[in-house]
Length: 180
Image (cartoon, rainbow, N blue to C red):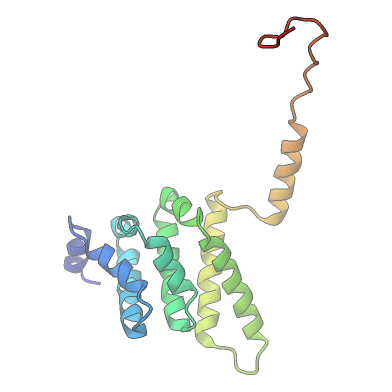
């Protein structure tokens, strides 16, 4: 991506927002593929473009549209966009993963694992799995997500921190708001 193009998209305009909205198009897969490719390249080149994705009110739906696409190349582009956004900064990563996107990434890994057992695994799905796993590993390093074991340990520690029961008030102690 040329620096001139990146600067153009980083400016005070709606170019990134428009790209995001085109990713949500459910009529023309060629448009979605092109917009997702452009957005993948922009988010890899610019942290500011990663943040500008949120300027579109439909950013989550549009990213989910990419990730859930039956066209694995569109799905791959969506995974790269999410990976770039997660890698850009912790705040952006948290905002992205506060949605269903993390579960979808995990489901894509499972889908790729199932496909790997077929006679001819889809090579793009292998790439999807790699990007999803790398993204999830990055979020783990940022302490945004935990492994199942870490979640169980943390839950056990929280149970240990339960406050002791408070004594019930003594009978006839004149509770406020009660009529006698």
